[in-house]
Image 1 (cartoon, rainbow, N blue to C red):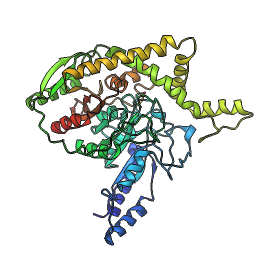
Image 2: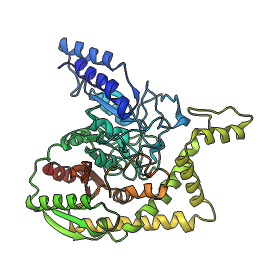
Image 3: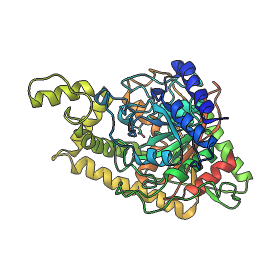
Image 4: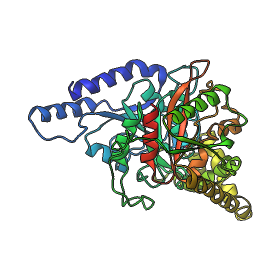
Length: 453
Ligand code: GLN
């Protein structure tokens, strides 16, 4: 098959099917010309990069030169970045072609993709349900085969939770593994880019390309890239799996619990040792996250002032312009978070909220570090429930925030984790299994995930 045929297949399929799924915000029509050039070079016998002509699609919070980047917000309507995010550059160097940009919750704030200014992405398994979020477009596009793989970002679960709800693999690398240069910042101490794919091998392959030290990101870890597919088939006999009791309590859908426990049995039969563990500060994770993430977001989003990027409202005078631009440009959830974040950082409340949250974050981190002294990986459900109905939780932010109860603490800790499919509930909706690892232990996590598949 030629690069042209391959890309034409995806482009046509998107045009036919994405009218129902709404996963793309922007489609790169010139991809066929790019593919033709590759085919011509190949015909001439020119040396091409390893993945020349393979299409991939990107969540719309990673900047792409020559294509809009909106973060699904009105405030970035028509914003064109003058440069590419490091991950986009790395993919292009390997010959990947960018199919387009994917829908998400505005500025990655949400768990259902309902917070997009432009459209609501539907879950391909049931069009009345959400695909999860915030990387809902990235998960739905893979699930509906509208891209062979995509990139998403995960601040509190935004790769893993939609992967779980859409029955695909979603990997959140260790904080610092993948460069955040060109990822529009939401909560800088938590954000991390990762792949969403059909299988574990593809996730490993993409991590081998994007997981690389980058001078342009001061938090990027000083590791060169390596081949994460090399250890996928390694024997997992004797590996110790921790099962934290706090992740199977109240609020979990019975079938989710049942399937995840079955999966754990399967690991046992593959020779792994199963150990009940405790992550005692888990109950504080959601509260801590919504203080730290909103604080960082309120600061990061201060740059959208109508002067530098995207949308600017008609106004009289500078202050009026700021106010109008921000009140029209941001959606409700984003405004809610800016207000919360500004509040917890304000002089009178800083010690009571932000500082306290940082201290509890350390306790949560220590829980994980202590657990990883005893076990190799930790297995839990990815999401307490399967995909919920569109509109079901959108009027109740607190309910929505609880969708990430099993994913959020890993971001506070900073380790790596993957969600992989592990069965279906009684409505035939997919269930995901989460495997979490210590800092920079992606290989172990990927190895176990691959053996399970
Ligand atoms: N759902 C969480 C939030 O709304 C996590 C989002 C994310 O990981 N980007 O903040």
